[in-house]
Length: 161
Ligand SMILES: [Zn+2]
View (cartoon, rainbow, N blue to C red):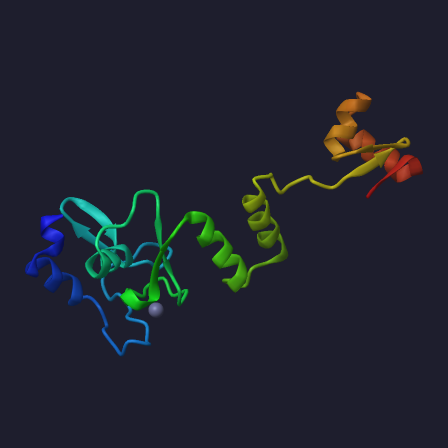
């Protein structure tokens, strides 16, 4: 904490930042995490550069909160582009911005993450006149394997809804 506020720390921090005008992104020129976020070694720990920047500008981050980029640019440490929020906000943000060429599958995963439900195998099926929430539910209720259910469905004994 002490080192974080010291002149020496601030020198070390800002030397690695491409500081530009207020509206522009200030990209971190030091080491980065795989996801593109800047990293800096501080008092024995590797820290996120954008979180450090937020702390320099605003003080400490409340426990459990994440620092988000309003510019969606991971390397950016411009304090005006940083907001504190929950991880939930972060997921919603990514969804709204349709980041990194979000595929249909990724969108389903995100919405499942938000609703707290697993994304896979959510197709309802009708099998021998009964409606099941999934193929595996139809399989266990009927006492036959999933491939067998599929085979019987292909012969007209059921369908995916
Ligand atoms: Zn930015």
